[in-house]
Length: 460
Image (cartoon, rainbow, N blue to C red; front, side, top):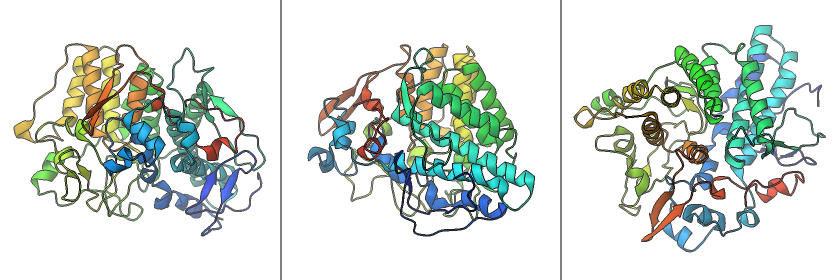
């Protein structure tokens, strides 16, 4: 497949499944790409980015997400969902997990980006533009591998990463290649190599947050290094990202204006005025999603706009256990990266490097734009450990409705200083999740393991 003359872009069903059947394809529409503008337009495919449709079944294992219907859990409608939600380690999730759309669509995106990487330099058009599109595909290939390694493999540990089983790293679009499971270290090395190769080529400014630029690339680099616990390097990368975009949306001012409209329209490809979004991925609109439970509600104090203006308990949802995310006719950046997250990554790295006082200044600079003045109080920390814990709590509030809670629970439970036992109350009973539980690693579905004999489970 090295001499493809065109790319067929599938809008709904480009799915990577196997080493024998590399792609299961059910094309519902196709576009033959010949010039650089057409290749660049691939990044505008909103439908391909809707990762939030597939995240709920994964995120329900956190202390944030909640089932839409209690009876689904009480009646064990889906054994995997019930085991994840009730933190039941005795359930064999592997035998009960048939498919996983988040996994499949992540690899579908990787397949798309691999085709672009292999074909775009032969397209018609300006050489500089072709190299930039190549770099966009490269950074997004890294991003999707990062999503996968932090969902389906153990958290990065420098002492064991070279032997810990990881994921399948797909470096080329080749229907006949043998796909082999990487180690965690191999996956991170490939991710870092892609990021570092793309960074010098990416533009400073792009048409929309669906097109990655340097601010996003440095943010992703900071996130990867944070998860690898290379805090000095992560701090440098976060600062680089913020040098390109440090905008923080002022929710207080927006609320005081009567919350007229949130700056994320229905169609980000047409008009996208969400300056906080360094890269947009995974929003939806027109209907509510992301049910949170009382545990998550309790994270917020009085006057926090992130809860008060975006969540409500409608009459048809059981209360007071639930509040429900309302789409409010805008598209929420579920999986991508925002400048507010970079600010919190910077703060965490500062705290871990000993500057906990400076870290709290950063945190409060964000919080003052999220909490009504009558209720706002600066947060303080007496040492680095307390500062990191405060920052993690702030991440939970700021990044509500995203996979970051799952990833934070995983990475922090690898450190004795920060590991904790999580609790939730459901149907009058308290459930607990112990540090290091295998439940925080998602199992590969049967559709993946049946067609990839080399793919071994990282959990059960």
